[in-house]
Image 1 (cartoon, chains in turn brown, green):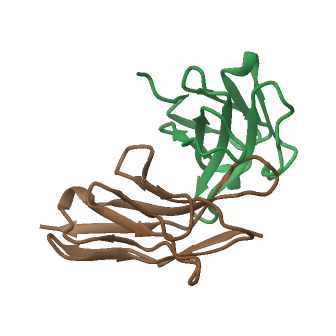
Image 2 (cartoon, each protein chain N blue to C red):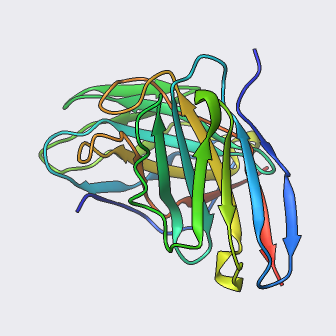
Length: 114
Length: 116
């Protein structure tokens, strides 16, 4: 079945450092891909998405490119801030069964230190 | 506008008791999803409602779990005879439409369930 694998955390960075969180997926076809973020004490929020190969999703300085040749959707940010400290989830939209349910990776905790 | 709301925000119950968790989706959203977030299993799909169609229950972990959606709006997730492994955060999400549509899923803040 479809699945998503994320790099394990926690990831600890200093402010203004470069961020990469790796995400790879296994799926039939070409599902839509997402990054969700969960800030401390808050609910899941959509950060960015890409719906087809070579699409680049971007938001709040974060970017991710849909790479079908490597089945990857790595999240990057050039200069992180303390306020980016959160848990990040990579997800795909499951095309089987016609529910549109999301299949999530395990989540990666990011801590940014001043 | 109002987002997805869930109640209660926290629930502590004794093993063997029944619990009901409530979700109010965004007005006008026809699709509603329940997910569970637990330490051991991560975020996993439980059940999906689309309008008045029969729900997709393929993610429910046991027959102790059930859900209904009244009038195509509010949904209740019921767990009977709770077990300690049911302890998790239960998340509800709604979308303008589900299935293979491109509409975003909006998540509620979740209900943290602790079974003692």
